[in-house]
Each structure stands twice: as structure tokens, then as C-alpha cells.
Length: 180
Image (cartoon, rainbow, N blue to C red; front, side, top):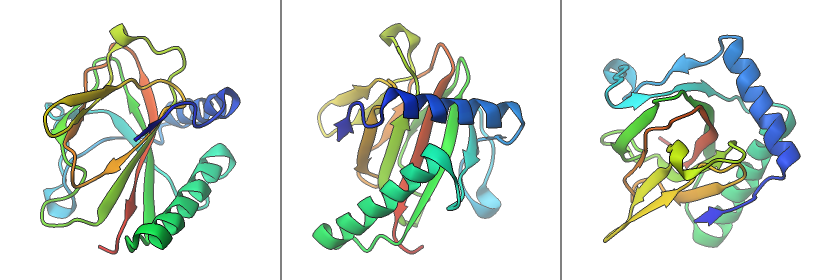
């Protein structure tokens, strides 16, 4: 599901500024794949930087976390999904960044149930790349990383990738999770 203009331009600008300021201050880490003793940085698979957010975030990021908590409650009420937690990070893909085709769950574990992505890139143009490519059963869906686009999909069901980007690309990316 893609919801355009989920946040207003002022909220997007505030989030962009927060991402860029925290990136400039050195808070981001190069993104890795795997977890525990298998966690590694593999730049041939993934080339971006992330900053994991805490439950006590303030400003628009805190408001977005609160909205995700409400969404989790509503999904549990309507669909009985047993979602109990949210994990969320800022993602910054530099020029040339990408993330090869993957599923949003660790091998042998399926705690991540719903993937959530909010884009923070105003005036994005197709030639800038960086689209989210979702692999459907018989076709692909390319979602532009346009500011305000909110994307939701089942984490275990859809393989996806971030196509190479020709300029810096920002997002809030996270998961609604069951107990791990």
C-alpha cells in the first residue's frame, strides 16, 4: 500500500533537517546485514547508513512513532496480528547507494510482520533513481522515494530492493513486530 502525502511539507522538512543534522554529527552507522555473530557490512549488497530510533524520540519522529503504535493497536484489533513492538531507523542512501533484493526478516525468524517506509525527498525525479522495487507475484512495482509517500507491506511476503540512487535519498524505515 502506498499513501502519498502522508505528512505535510513542514513535517517532512523537520524530519529531513533532523536526519541531516544527526548524520552530520556522526550519529549514523554504516548499515549491515544479518544479526548477532552473522552481522556484517557487505557493501556489494547494501550501501546506506542508518540511525536506530528510540521510543523517547521527540518532534515529528516521536509523533510518527506514536502513530505507528496506534496503527499496531488497530491492526491487532482488526486482524489479530499480535504485534507488540516497533523498530524504526532513519536511513540515508548516499549518491550511488542501493540495497539488493531481499526480504525484511532474518533467516529462521519472522518477528517483522509489517514493513513501513516514509520518504523524505522533496521534488524527487525519476532520473534520480532510488526507487523501491517491490516484487509482486507476476510483476514489479516501483515506488518513487517522493517526500510524504508512506509505504506499507507484509515483511515476509514481498521481496524488494532499493535501486541505485543518483543523489542522497532519505527515509524513515521500520517494522511492526511480533515477539522474537
